[in-house]
Length: 319
View 1 (cartoon, rainbow, N blue to C red):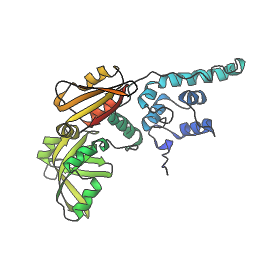
View 2 (spheres, one colour):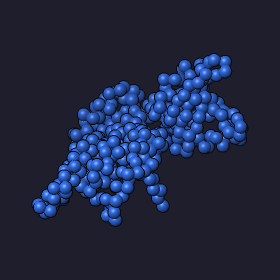
View 3 (cartoon, rainbow, N blue to C red):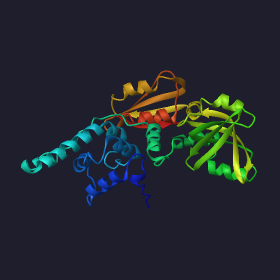
View 4 (tube, one colour):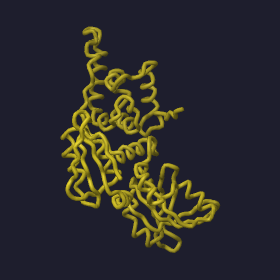
């Protein structure tokens, strides 16, 4: 019931590094990041290798906050270095290995936003593995009647000539046509697959700045069949977060104490059309106090995701 993705297929993780990890792990899974650091050799694994492993989610069972592990790699490598030096000098035997059970302490840091987490994952693996950046916009896309790519492709084969799609820009290329004018080829992806769409001169000039790699957008396309496959032409492009800001009108943020207040203020600086209510949970959730913030704010699933990663925030709900 699971799909296992090979460590050796992660960018920057070579065969030697993988063989070393498997060898020191043996039949005893790593119990903690400290246990991992004490078993590996810093000669076989460098910091860059570990950065890509973190970005791919290889340490999620030991510590789900990838940002915390990423920022703590110097300490992990330092512990690995000290442990290897002690082994070389025989100090483990001399002092009875008293340091071996001391926990590795890493600083508490805000987790990456869902978008940042997935972009780093994509950079390390080459595709989105654990989720897709537009998944959190599902309710917005449903309101807009945006179709998944595979569903739209089937509709085009049955005669559909236009539609609304959402996707994250994977790449954007520009070429010259035979007549000498420039055209663009945007490659986008959603949770059902990847697709290409063309932009001719006027549309390329109009939407070039919006179609940046890694950005999620909503596109209106014209379509027809070419060589038994759908061929798409982009007519309109909108950043998905701006679309969400127009459609999502309220947000409820649940907190247990005052710790998240500064982060809330930081993330809610941009004015918009949405209402924000903060619900303070008191007495272990037995009592609640609702505080409606004055003014209106720009809201989006991206902002909600960033707030969910703030220590002290227990939940964020949008409507």
